Each structure stands twice: as structure tokens, then as C-alpha cells.
Length: 392
Image 1 (cartoon, rainbow, N blue to C red):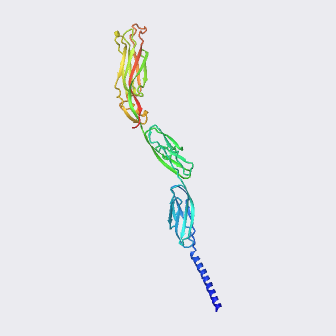
Image 2 (cartoon, rainbow, N blue to C red):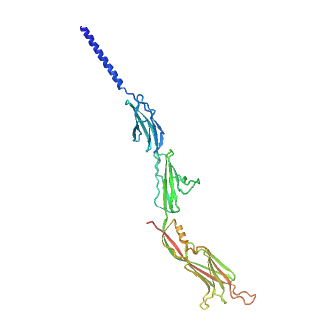
């Protein structure tokens, strides 16, 4: 009876141990989680700053069950979760970014995969242009502070004037007028200069910037100074001969008046010689002439001829004027409509038409074959004086 009881007790113990083992085995099966397999591709893997990349994880395998979510870490501080294994992302900063994908299946299993995306940074363009530009200035366009995030060598291409087609291809906005970091641009007239600068890092990173330069005219104060110009001539003319001289007294001035006095040396024998003084201002059709007349012999006055004129042009305007250059303003002042008399060629002529007295006896030498003379010319002009002044 006691032996039977011991056998029964051993059987119960074995059964209990077997139940514990079976229970432990069942618990192990229930806690076993199968992880998925993450597969990630990126297209493209090298881009320019600001561009986007497409990420594809649709080849990932849940192994058992289904994939319930895709967690994306783009490496630039941006994260997102999707239920589809396909997304895209725009990279606004340059650099190398480790993009990491984590997939999760419905059993709670996870797996990760990553790709490296290289983002090339566009050059950081730094263009300096002076704000105060006057006609005739040489403008410094300075892009030497332009940098490349990757430290590469930069290529500069300047089109310095959209109104000029320097390469002759029909498109004035694609010229390459300079490849330097700094450009010196001369100005000739007031107005707006439009152009552009393109900077290339050689890795696909290109940045363009248009520029506009407002060129202002220069400013001058104008005053007029009265001057008298004088010429003196002396010579000898035989009867029938002519003397002539050309001049341009209106260059750089405004003609106001002129006086011309021709005097003959006193003859011992009377009557006095007869000469003619004439003036031809060619461009204006202005012709004047006078014949000599004898002076009072008792007062020792010479034989002379005079011609003169006054108020030939109005007085010059004074004040402050804007112009692209001093030369441009002078040209405008001196060629003002209604004030251009005497700008061209002047021709002075003396003609000795008769020298008296002639010989009384036929065949005898002429006692008065000609005469010495002097000519004095006085021309009154107004000369503009320009003084450049600053803008208020």
C-alpha cells in the first residue's frame, strides 16, 4: 500500500514537470516576434541645394503580416511617418545627409536602412555696387566676397549692358563681357544700366543676379565772362592786289560785337588811296564792307575804313544746369538756338582798288603804286565758366 502511494506521488510530480515544460514552450512561441526587412533607395542621391529627392521603400518586406508604418528621418532635422513606402523631400541646406528609414510590421517588429544624400550648395553671391554714380564715373562692380559652401573654385560671367549685343548673336542678354571677380565699368551718359552676373561652382551650382545702375547727370553752375579779343595786321598792297585772312573767333565763346578799323599810311601826294575792307561770316550769310575815306589832314587824321556790329547774340543764361559732361553743357550753351551767330568761319578781305595820284605824263612811273596799311580787329565775346557743384 505504501509502495503504491509512492508511485502515484512520483507520477504526479512528473506530470507537473511536464506541464511546466509544456507551458514554458507555449509561452516562447507566443513571445517570438518576426522583424521585417527594410529596403531603401533614393533618386537622385546628388542634388543641388533646394532640389528634392524621391525615396522608395516599397521593396521592404514585412516577413510576416504587413508593414504598418514607415518612419523617415531625413537627417536635416525633418522627420515624418507614412503608411506608404514612397515619399519625397526637399533639401534647403547644403551638405551630406544620412537619411534613415525605419519600417514596422503588425507584429511590432522593426528594421532600418539608410542612404547618404549629397546636397551641393549654390554659391552665395555677394555683389557690391556704389549707390551714387555720376556720368563719366568709372563704376566698380565687386563680387569678390562671393563664396562657395564647399570651398570650390568659382567661375564669374558678367553681362555688363543688356542694351548692347557684344557677341553679335542677336541676344543682348547672354554676353560674357568679363570673367573677373571685380569689374571696372566706365559710364558716358546718364540713364539706367542693366546687366547680370552669373556664378558657377563647376558642380552644377549656378546663381544669377541682375543689377541696375542709375547714372545721374553732373551738375554745374554757369557764369559768363566778357572778354575782348584783338588782332593786329599790317602789310603793303599795290593797286589791284588783295589781302585776306580767315579766323574762327566763336570757338568756345558767344559773339557779342565786333569792330574793324583799316588805316592807310598818309600819302604825301593827294588824293588819298581808295581801299575796301570787307567781312564775310560764311555760315550766317553776314556780309559787311566799307571804303576808305580821307581824314582831316590838318588834324593829321589817316585815311580809314570802319565796319562794326553789336548785339549779335543774346546774353548767356546763368544758373545751375545738369549735363552728362562739361563738354556737353558747353556745346548746348554755345549752340543754343538763336544764339549761334559767328560760330563758323570769318573771312576778312582788303582790296586796294585804286592808288592815287597816277602819273600825269604817259609812260612815266606811277608816283603812287600802293600803300602800307594796318588793320585792327576787336571782337567782344562772352565765355562760359563752369563750376561743378554737388547735389543738395
